[in-house]
Image (cartoon, rainbow, N blue to C red; front, side):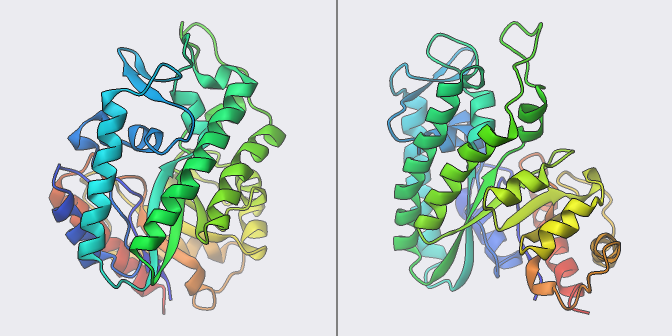
Length: 324
C-alpha cells in the first residue's frame, strides 16, 4: 500500500510533542524529526556535522567550518541528537516496519561548509572527497546506534541534497559572491554519493534521497544506488528519465502537500496529482501503490504547528486514496 511521511523538519522546540504528531499521523512510516527552531545546532547541517568521523567542526561568524577544532555548537548538536533518539526509543518502542532518519548529503555539505582557511569545501576536489568519506564513516556508527534502538524496524536513511542541482551546474557562489564555484562533474558526484550509499547499505538500512529543487538529477541519483527519490512534484517535469528509473526499481516519493501554511487542496486532489504524473507513463497506480510515498513538498520547519500536523494528515489521507 502507499505510505505517507514527512521530509524531516518540524516547527517549534518540543521534540516529544513533534514526535507524537508524527506517530499519530504517519505512523506507518514515521521519521525522527529535526527541530531547527532550537538553534543552528539543531538544523540539518549542524546535526549532520555532529556525525562526521575524523573531521571536527565549529561554528564561525560566517557559518560552519571544519578543520578548526570541535566547537561547543557541534557538541550541543551531538548531545541533542542523542537525547532525541532516547525519546524516540521510548515513544516508538517496539515499532515494526519502516522508520526514517535524515542526514544532509555530502554534496550539499560541501556547498555549505567552509574549509579551515575559508571558502566552501566544494572548491577543492580532495575536500569534497574527504567530507563524503567522513560522512560515510560517521553514518556507519549512527545507523548501528539507531538499529540497536529499533531492532524490529526497517531503517530508512534519507539523504537530503537540496543543493545538488546547483553543485552540478556551477550555481554555488564563491565567498566573494562575484563568481561561482566550478561545477562538479557527474562521475565525481556519483563516486561521492556512492560512498555514502554503500555505508548505509552496509548497515542494513535503505538509502533514499530527497531534493526539493528543480532539475533533480534522476539518472545520477538512481545510478548511485538510491532506492527511492523524494521530490517536490510541482518543480519537476515528467521526463522519460522518471519512468525509466521507476521501471528499474527506484521508488517515487511525491511531495505534494504545501510545506508552509496554505489553503490546501483536498486529499483527493493531491492524490489526483500523483495519478496524473504516473498516468503520463502508463503506470497503474493501484498495481504500484506499494512503491509510492506521499509527503509535504519539503521540511515543515517554516509552518505553524497546526499546519504541520494538518500537512502530515493530508499526506496520509492522499496516500490512502491511491489504494483505489
